Image (cartoon, rainbow, N blue to C red; front, side, top):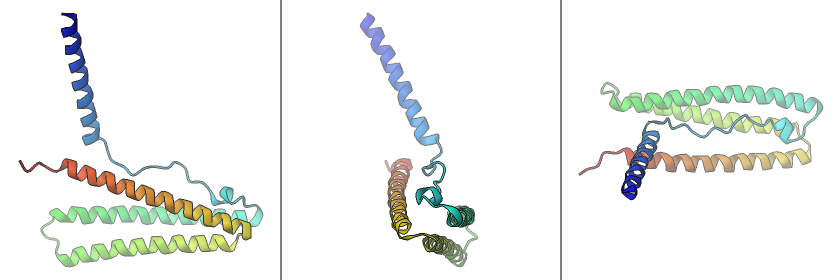
Length: 165
């Protein structure tokens, strides 16, 4: 008798656990990973004096401008994905929107490249070597995040598709 009661309680607990897991998978917002506060190149490269203050100013401007471009990219992508249901949008409108997305990405990449070139110009040989390591480390992290996000979003898209049965 006690065994039967134990199994009933166990089944109820497992059903609740599964229901809560499904709830969080379906209803929880899916945000890209957040990596916390940005580390300053001034600290990573152990910069001092005038070079440190110049790079700190470059860094502030770079991240302010880059964040603005990232926000614009999100808005452009949102417009693009909302246009799937908009019957009034023609292919020309869609092409213009995609061109704006591509141009935004180009600006972001160019700005980042120019930023690192300006920082590199203020570094000595040892700091330049360290800067190259920082850039390659950041790229590896970015690539890993991209692959992870792509795999997770593909899984979510497929798992949310209605079954054809």
